[in-house]
Length: 311
Ligand code: GDP
Ligand code: ZN
Image (cartoon, protein in one colour):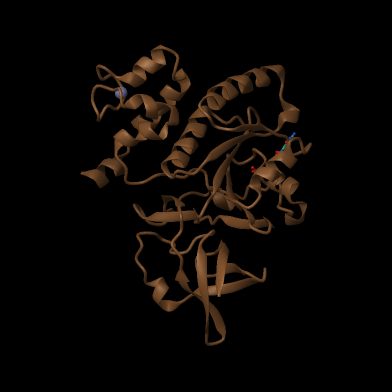
């Protein structure tokens, strides 16, 4: 019997089967021994095969997933923790104020999405609250991201503004929602599907306590074949084990120009004949994107773990 994993606690899994029933399962013994360099062999979104074992139902096999996104395990250094598998699209919920989402945060998210080849969109929430000044900042943000091809949607989860059009975009897909806490993800998910009744405004302290808490994503069913993945407490995803030269490729508007750089391992910092720097000077690449790129690069360069892993 085949099913899809909706929830995982690390030892128990909730699996939806074709009848629509949700079964509580363990992992079959041999699967627990698999060393996949991850701390969790099964994640939400995985398609699995179930079997009866004694009086229980167990996950006996895991189908290969089309993609997955990871972060470094909160429990074990250098180990991957899979947040979710088989994701069709990523929606980043942001706000201009209360709280402010920086373009630096947005760009790290978009870079991860590009690295996993998962389409990403930006949802700018709390439209009902913005001052004239906020709206000007929003225009700048739209100018950056729409120009390079990222869909941006202006919504208000509270007033249900543009919620119907977001709902349409979710149909027959697995969509992962992310964003700072307080931007309105729970409110938005409730607006999309009131019966889910997520608790709003409860930023669980447990999640913020630091490195030793594992937070699990949860997949929620909106309709047949339509799922959303909520990532409470997961602040950032990451890509692991990559070369510094790769980062530029994950800035989608850099990609086309990069091939014109004089050196093929150009990091686009101050190398002669760099097409990216030229693009910034000519206004083809937005200055803020370039700054965020440099910050990300610097972060990885200074990251002791990165060099320790590499050398
Ligand atoms: P989460 O941490 O991302 O899940 O955010 P919540 O859904 O818990 O929302 C945080 C706060 O923002 C709550 O007080 C919500 O009522 C409020 N909020 C969410 N969406 C909107 C919106 O569109 N407009 C306004 N004015 N407030 C909102
Ligand atoms: Zn270059």
